[in-house]
Length: 483
Ligand code: URA
Ligand code: SF4
Image: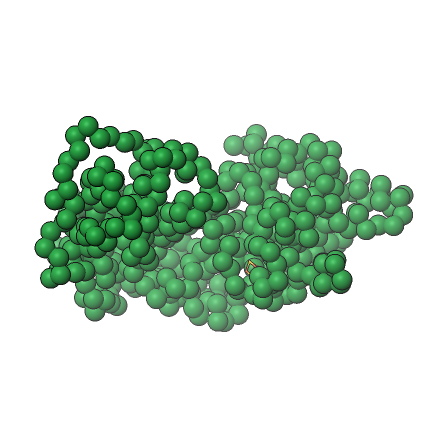
């Protein structure tokens, strides 16, 4: 048995050197135990791979993709990761294309670890909040509890972003510091060592309120962009929670008042930091990260019977966002929105209106299929208000990530989610609605057209649907011209 002691939880070079030496000496994965020095300080004296001879003539190449994957996966908190990576490396020697076999359990596991690490990294960019300490030698300090060992990976981002402000990010694992010139890493600390309530917190709160006035939607978007588990470390949490608890209108009025109070100082030393951080919090949701996160959503009961979360699809830079009701039977099985009969109707209508489906971001108000089983058939059921509300967080985050010129709500459920209230289609279709700074058009759902029994009515309603979509197409053309 060989025992390898790595220098730290993030010692990729140590792992790489040891793994290489082990593999060249034909040491099988099951003959190696991996550990980290500070986790087992007394038990082991040296890295036993050091005793293995170098095999000068032995070489093997691994795909560059493996190195990238391993660099990320090694930061996962799973204590088996070093062994799993070595097993994959071992198998890669004789199976060079193994990484392309996504269903292979080793490949799938390492891919999942790497993805989780990157997700955590992006959350850190979005959710770290600095507080100012010291009046003379100002220093910014943040407390963060990452899921994985990502502090060293993420530190350069903060160094670049806040290059002219000395900062420290304290975590239970390690701490990162920036003195304006270099990053240094020190051991982790207890939360009690992080500064609590102070002056920056106050500034941040009023600043946070100010930047979201008067664009009211952004307040809502912001709430949903921050998963609850991060709130406890955010100074603005004490602002968000009452917002959600109280009636929306009152809360927004409260923010508006606070923001416009003339005696509130708006220009502060720490304002650039707060501004940058607010931008970061909004910018770091990519659709891919959202889709990953929504795959495990349990915010309403609909996930229980459905096959999978069917998330939105389309280019992140789309100017048009289409919102349907919920996935149907075919979408639930395929994992993609609008691929069944309603999707075919939608495809035809988009084409007739001169809109290229590939350029559109297409999603649903509710991301899981709701149905009742009748024999072999799964009968579609309308989502209720609680389900629409629970799922709205995903729509709001998609909206914030895509920032389309126009949102088209297909049918009453979509209109309910997009406009935040029950909205009759016939009374509201055919013209643009401004909803909290987003342009919205409501129209019927394509499956309504499928259900019409009479051919004449069908043709007429189809034409009205096309007319609505053409309003959208015109709007997008005008937006391009104005840009
Ligand atoms: N109907 C919808 O609203 N969405 C789909 O994805 C499919 C059918
Ligand atoms: Fe979550 Fe929406 Fe699925 Fe409900 S329907 S579990 S809110 S993704």
